[in-house]
Image (tube, rainbow, N blue to C red; front, side, top):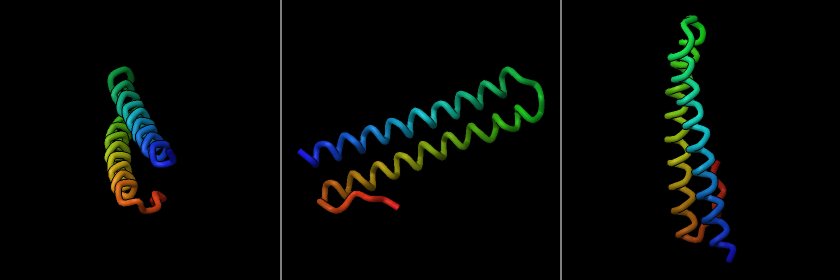
Length: 78
């Protein structure tokens, strides 16, 4: 039972990373599209790659924890 809860918690964490990354990409694209001020455009170009990097990190972390769960190791990731 505890293993199933851990697997589900890992999946929820991945979904949270995905949701946040998508929000960053959409916010960045919106800033670029709807504002002409250079500061907003620069912020948009920073947010978009930041969202992509966050998604990659969340996916990597999910895979690491999934492997640890399969091996029966502790799931804490630094």
